[in-house]
Length: 309
Image (tube, rainbow, N blue to C red):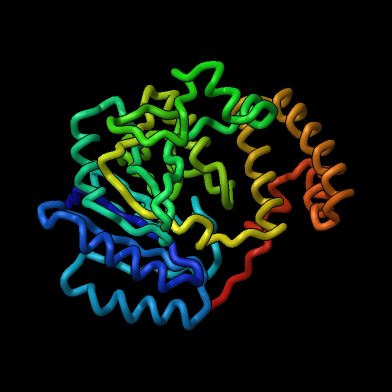
């Protein structure tokens, strides 16, 4: 059976957020939209997993919903690709579990994609829990963005770099849409190979949207759709995650811009963090990772353990 939309949500030790997210989707999504749901438990502890399983079992009679457990934390891309393997939807919706819909985002995005065959991915407008706007479109991770910042790029070329923090009233093209809610044409997603599972966390949006752009598929914000994102709830800040951010950034720069851009950015970050570490000693591990050139071999992906329940 072909579905209109395959919804894929990752849970990692945040079951309450996941349940609230699913409930908001059920509440707002039109009954005319034929959806299937894959909830990927990315090696949560036993209590989180069994609490989630109990909930999924309670709603499975009235919804096409499946809980899939991974015995190892596969990260963002890896976790989502577990769901992709079973998805049969025309469209793929990857939704963070710390998201609450405010309207029928799935129908809105489907209708937009049905009418715009040039679009490979789109997303609704994100807001913080206090109602303030969260950027949904963004500019590719690049040497220019890292050296000069987003505001400089937006002031130099507003067509190429539209303002991220503007509340748009009409669909707006961007370079990519935020990973908290990405709605793909499944055919385009499959054509470019899906998420790069070498990346454990961060910068997956630049990577996949760069590949989509090579087959002339664009990324759009569709502001009619609205959702709340409890930003950072699923990935609390830590030095380990700051290191992971740099590993992913440098990987994506090397992959899409070449070795010269990689070494320029690496040198810039090494200088930045050696001075930063003198003021904030907690940043020393970040500098050490950069001194090692932030290889994928030190990624959190390679530190995960298998946990069988």
